[in-house]
Structure formats: structure tokens, C-alpha cells
View (cartoon, helix red, strand yellow):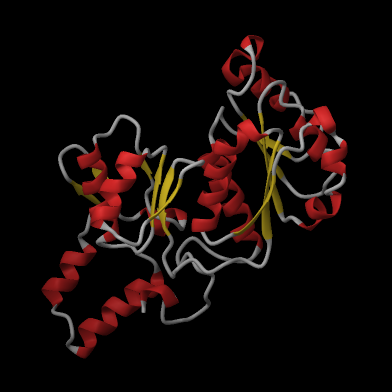
Length: 270
């Protein structure tokens, strides 16, 4: 429990709005909820600044819905990755406000606790075929409260398309570069900008790209400084990491998730 929440709890007991027994129950909370097939981590926000995210493949629709119910009982934010239309329809029936990004295969609900940042994350792709992974990164960052801009289909096969947008790249605080085939775009961008670059290799490409391994190795061997690489097709991981960088740069801490400096705890808790 962060200091703001603890202060609020003690004030509730002091004022008589909460009994000592109720406060003890909250303090003894182990931080997760065991629902048999899953242990939902309700303290993820306090540790990481953002609630637990549902990875949908391998889970039944009913399991996904129940996990979402438990998360939204304590949070106003939801993110479910690699979700298909069936998952979206089931979640929409239960939570009418959820949205779905078909390209990114991601169901989301952004809470009021995550206001938009001043800085910007720029998501760049080598080709149109990389957009699904790029949208997963972009939506993840947007739900975490980051301003996101997009620059798609500017791969090295026509590098003038990238250079024509140098000004947009220079304005970005963090850049996510998503590319398949040989994955050279991350090195090119990394050599042009001062912002940190998070490279995402995709499984786009012909046989010798080995399902994204070729792009992964190219990105890992980049000679451009400031390039960090996530796993193949891991748009979520890139969007999450880019958001952490931007939120830290703007002075937001993981305890409140919104950057407010109130001594009474997070504004999103009031």
C-alpha cells in the first residue's frame, strides 16, 4: 500500500467511517485474488503503475471475462491483448464501455487515472504488414496515458519516406520501431535521433527471415546507440516499456500512476 492510500485508510478509521476490523482486513490483503484457474494480481498498480494485463491466447472466453470482472472491481482500466472478436463481444456484453482495436487485436478501457502526457511516443513501421504489432504497442501506450503518434510504411526500401518525416521523429520523446524482413529500420532511426528507440522485430518476411529471427538478430546487432530490443512481435512489451520511459521522464511515480503531487494520495483514488 502506498503512503497516500495508507494515510487515507487511517483517516477513515480516525473519523469513524471505517472500523478497526475493516482496516485490519485491508492491511492483511495478500495483494492477489485466487479464483482457482488464476491469481489476479491487484497490487500490480502499486508496484508497476498499471494494472495486470490479460494475455488472451490459451484462456477460454469465460476465464477472460471473469479475470476482467475481478480487475475492474478494483480498477477502472482494462487491457486484454491478442484478443479476437469473440473475446471482444463477450467483454462488450459485460462492460459496454470497452473498445476494440481490430488491427492490434486488443480490448481496452482507459480509466480517468491516466491523463495524457506532454511528451509523445512515436510508433514507426517498416511496412503495412507490421501494423498489427505496431497498433498493439500504440494502444498499450495510449491506455497507459501517453500521447502517441504514428508513422507507418517508411521502411528502408524507400528510405526517403522516412527522411521526409525527420521533424516528426525529432519531436518524439520515445520512438518504437516495428519492422520485419531484415529489420534494418531500427538502426537507421537510431542513427538519426537522440530519443531512445525500442525496436520490435516482427515475423513478417519470406522464409529466410525465420519467423522474425533475422530481424531480431539485426536489431540486437545494431551499431546505433540507444536502441533496445524486445521479443519478436511483442508490441505490448514495447508499448509498455516506452510508456515507463516517458512517464518517468515526466516525473510520474509508480505509486499513484498519475503524477499528481497531492499529500492526500492519488487524485484517481478520490
